[in-house]
Every structure is written in structure tokens, then in C-alpha cells.
Image 1 (cartoon, one colour):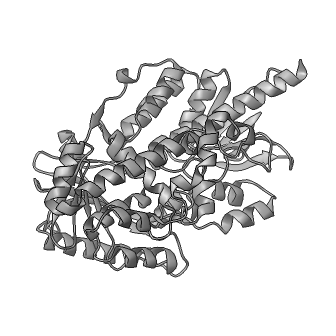
Image 2 (spheres, rainbow, N blue to C red; image 1 turned 180 degrees about the vertical axis):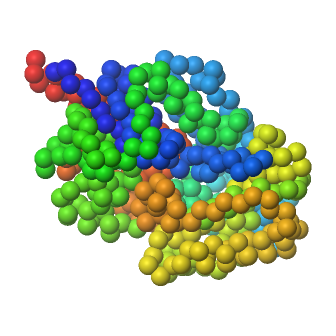
Image 3 (cartoon, one colour; image 1 turned 90 degrees about the vertical axis):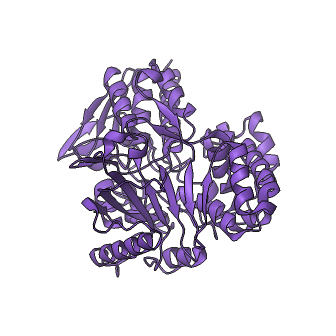
Length: 500
């Protein structure tokens, strides 16, 4: 059986990582990206003297990337330089206090002691608790395609399956964090990690407390030159392995006969393939790319989308030593913020403000006396009554006013600006209702069983990206590509064996 053609939809991290693995395994791979350049949500923009990453701004689990380069036959250090970040983030609390969070345990304990001495012991207990969740769940939930029964029923997974109660699935993130800390500022800080996969800490299961362990136990990193250098490196590797990358090539349909995918329609032309690896949002794929299968479409459309966001790219003509590489300015009422977003589908009155300034690490990303500010606000996914042009202006005023009260009066210092709303995320990246992280993990069903990497509706169709297992964020999205590519290769080998 000679045919080994794969059509890959999208040029995001999941699709790219899957394409690289498949090419290394001997498949003929064509990748189709609808935008002029690849990267998906991980992209970059240059506005005058200022350069910005437009998506992910912090890297964790760099060993995932190293493993991909090793598998592909390349040396990671020849292409990328990962720089540990310390502090990982500077937090500005509603009462005016400030705290630097660090993966260095001694520094972190000292920072907590200064903020709330009684909570130092609680932090040590919390780290042990999050480490236990990590040790029990990482292999099965992050590195295994859990929808594949044969892979799930491996002896090494039995420890987790028999100890599910120890991964804290029945409390919410907020309920469990509150068990370890008495200071509301620290509770708010650790509640925040539910937003890393676009979820509400007051609804999402406490198993997501694995996320702070990954950051504080394993460390956070910056990619020298900007996160988009990762895309550049993967593109180089893909080309070296023979992947054909087509940009400005919009996939309009996944071709199938009702049972099996047979290729894609791109810019009006059919491209035959033995397998299709879809890196586009799986919900959008079933809505727009796959004819038929209405029941599956209806089921997916009932799933709650994750957080979206509003992003301001600001070239600021001033230096601010009081800000770190990563900064969070918390809202006064975190619970109210998430109720507005998820329960009422409203733009929050006072959103939490995230500010990343890569010129702190790469001076060339801004003019000598300036800084490049990536400002992200938590937002709901799209709803009919939202008028985003108005919300954009309102949020700009809200953010600038709050920053001014903190001592950062930048309104007259903004030299260049670009703004993204949930509508832009929907249009640019074909994300489900403008969501950034696919579906939310606000219920146990979606937290523990995201959309599978292999379609049950169509043979030969596989999925990668933040909307499917194992979830959003750089390492997990890349692992989704690994899982999809591995399943394709195994399916192909089984077909060959069946013919022998």
C-alpha cells in the first residue's frame, strides 16, 4: 500500500507539529494556511519601531519542543534559545500591593511572606498538592490520546484510573485554592491559572490546579527574539523534511463520501489525500468544512466556548521600570468578572489586565526610549448583541484610566496601536465564536474529555490544535499534533498489515 498523502489544514502549532512528524515518518504532506503566513494565533506584528507577538507570550514544558526536534532529526539549540523568566509575573492587586511570582521556591516563599506571612506554609502544601495532580494525570491526560481505549488501558495508567479522587475533580479551582490560602490576594493569583485554558476558576474542576505546578514546579521561559521564532524554526524544519506549505490557501471543504475523508477543496480546487489532519477549530470544521453529520454538529455547538480576549498592541514612547516582562493588574471583583463573561455573555465592567513587554528581554522590539505593550483582557465569546467597535473604545478608556491610577499614565505616549476583538479572532483564525482556547473546561465532561484527535464520523480525519485533546497552550497544542500524527501512522501501518 503505497499511498501516504496527508492534507493538513491550518498552519498553527498543532498542525505544524503534526506535519513535521508525518513528513519524518515518510508521508507526503501538504499544508494549507488561509492567511498570508503561518503560525495561527502565534503570530507577530511590526508597527513602526515596535514589534509584537500577537498570541502566546510564555513558554512552559520546553522539553515537548525538544522532543519534536529530536524526533525530526534536528538540534533544537541550533534554532532556538529558551530564556528562563524571573520573575515569571508581577502582580498588581486591587489594594495597591505588588508581588513578584517566581519559579525559584525560595524567592516565591519570600514574596508570599512579605505579602501574607501566614500563607507560606500553605504555599508549600499547595505545591505538593499540585505536584500530586501532575504526577497522577500528566501521562494520561497530557501525553495519551485518552479517547483511544486500547491506549488508555495500559498498565501504567491504572494508578491514575484507580486514584481519580486524588486529582480533586469534584471541587472547583477556587474552592481548592481557598483551602490552602487565607489571603484573598493569593487566592486570586492562583485562581487565575484556570484562564490558561480559557475557563472560569469558579466553575472549572480543581484538577486544573496542575497548571500552576507546570509553571512554578517546571518553570516559565521566553523564546529569545519572540515567540514567533518558534514558528520560524518549525517552518524551517518542515521545509527541510519536504512539507509543502501553501499560504493564502483557504480550505473550503473536507471531501468525503460519508464514511471516509478523501482530501480537501482549496480555493476551489480538490486536493486528493489519504488522510486529513485538521488544525482548524474542530467545532468550526464541523460547521463549515464538513457536509452532513448534523447530529455531531449540533452536539459540538452545545459546548460552551472558552474565554475570548481583547488585545491592544501599544507602542509606548516611555520606559517603565516598575513593570516586569509579564504583569497582571487584577480586577476588584474576580467572581463578578467571570459571571459577566460566562453567565451573562457580557464584556466585564472591570477586566483583569495582562501586560507583556518583550522589549524587557529583547531591546530591539521597541525604540530605545520606548516599550512594546501587549495588553490582553478576558472577554466573552461572540454574542449577537455585542457591538465590538463600541466595546473596543470603552475598554481602551477603562484600561488607560486604571493604569493611570496605578501611576502608568500612557494615554499620550501611545505612538502606534492595533486592536483585536473576538470578532477578529473568529475572522483571522476561524476560532469557534471568537474563543481563544476552543471549548471551556467549566464542566467535568469538557475538562476531562475534550474533542478527540481522531474523528469517529469519518475515517481518515484527524484533529490537532487547542480545541481538541489535550487542550490549549503551546506544549499541549504541539502534543495534539503528535497524537494525531501517531494515530495516522498507526492506522496506516494497520492497513498495510491487513494487506500482507
